[in-house]
Structures are given as C-alpha cells and as structure tokens.
Length: 202
Image 1 (spheres, rainbow, N blue to C red):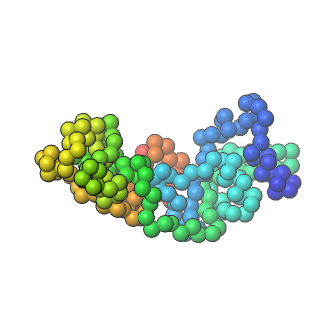
Image 2 (tube, rainbow, N blue to C red):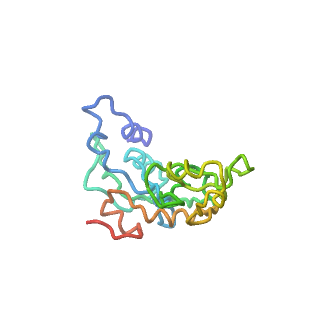
Image 3 (cartoon, rainbow, N blue to C red):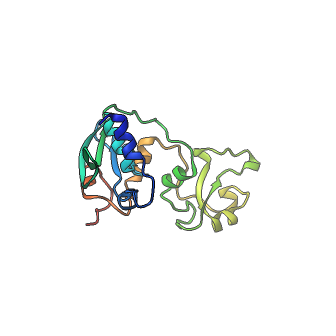
C-alpha cells in the first residue's frame, strides 16, 4: 500500500460507525523532541492517533512505545503509537508567547495578591492610566475581588503588595513550572519520559 493511501486510511472515516476515534480518542501519542524530552510539559505535547500515524508513515518520527491496540486495513496493520520521537530536533524559542494561559502558568494559576485560585483575571501592576504597559513585567494574575479592590491604583496606593514581582519568564522556566501541573491521565508508557514535581498516580 502506498504512503498516500496509508495517510488517507488514517484520516478518512465516513460514518460514526466507521470512525475509530470514537473508541480510540483516548489513545493520543506523547511527542518527544529528537533528544527524547517532551516538546512541551504544559500543555503536554500530545498528538491524536491519526496525526501520529501520518507522521510515522511520512518517516518524520520514530515509534518509541505503542498501545496494545491497532488499526487495520485489508493489507496493513499498525499498532497505535503511544510515544513518538521527532527525527529532527526542534529548538525551543527562548521566550514564550505573552498569552493569558502562559501568564497564569507563570503565576501558578493563583492570585498574586491573595493566593486564591478562583475567578482569575489579570491586573496591570502600574495602571494603564499611569503609563503602565501590557507586558510580562507589569502584569500579574489576580482574582476578580482583588482586581476590583485594587482598581486603578498602584499596589502601594492600594496597600496591596504583590506576593512576587512580575518577570518575563524563559521558555525553560515556564516548562519547569508546567511540571507542577500534570494532566489527569498519564498512560504508563509515558512515565519514563515525564518528570513531574508531584508523585504520579497509579
């Protein structure tokens, strides 16, 4: 069977009854860089099983481990990869994108004024009306009550000193921070490649 046919086989299913993703959607592949470290810890670098099989067929990745499940065609069978490694190393960027998600991750998903993990938003430490910029160094995660209480004042004016001073994290720092937030589900074949800050559940 040609590579193009294998790719189509992995990607094309015409009806719900034929669609194996209904039963295989819980079979994502953990994606490792060429140095066998995860591309990302948080969010964890996972590919759907179809994407993983396409990458295998196109010889872009190597299979490290597989599930005890397979996809079939009349002339072809492949075990579904559970861990794959890129053949070409992808150099991570030095600094992460400035997004709400990455900001919350930097601040451990907690308000930097009171520590609450609920109703999170973001706050300009130096208010915009006073020339404060929307940047890593001037934005902190804040719960809605603290944000409302602080209003358009500086932390000193509001008598609300932040728990930490905001910094621009490196990608490495953010990935290290992500290790403290493992996903709810970890397949047993992933565990040799992941290093979390808390004990893995059985």
